[in-house]
Length: 190
Image (tube, rainbow, N blue to C red):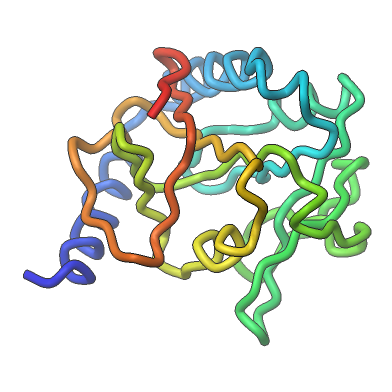
């Protein structure tokens, strides 16, 4: 089977797995993940942090976002342009003014645009990751396209529940890799 079909089957399987994580477990695991994320040594060397507002069954990032803002980081979140199918990051210093996108994701539509070279650390969602840092996204390619243009020193951190760690994901040349993974069990170097 070709890689695209394998990836689509994996997306379906991981979406189904995520449906089975209970509300209390998801909340408890999300808190642990966010706490680990806020202790990353790489944060000490960073000023501008890219993260994401969680939706659907993703790890809930509310605690991470408020924790980063409380510590004085410049927080930027992704905004998707439906016309160009491109993603950019915009300033999100006030989470109460985020607006719901066409995809159902909270975005800082009116925040100031942040250039890729300004961002030192990225917290990245995914449907699945493997221990080599490979990531399976939702299939839109937004993160792969965006992160292909960032500097080599930017730290990329995948955030997921332990049940989203796959033994070995299929990889294509355009697929991005993360430098670290964080699950409810801790920080996993790749």
